[in-house]
Length: 116
Image: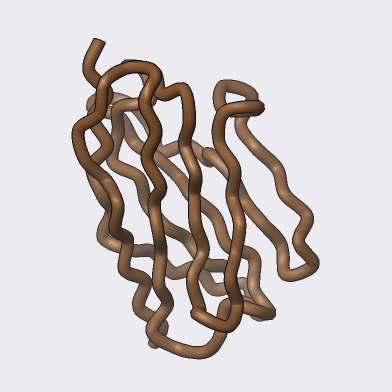
């Protein structure tokens, strides 16, 4: 069983930056697709960004040009650099890993709050 632990959330003013980290408990992320999702109150969970084992990335239209996902396989860690944050980015952010067999693992989430 893989455990994912997010960190780096917090309160920031609009226009500010945060970097989220997701550390995996096992040496497994290098072969898997890693992603960041978010869920705002009253809304469905949505994909923010994802990165494949080959390094291909995709982003939600709402964060393109502002957020960057990256991975550091040697540390079993994936990051989400968030710049130019907006109040509408406020949500709980979840780390996700999809294994080569198609199993999905989730972290507990970290709160990001952007004040206007």
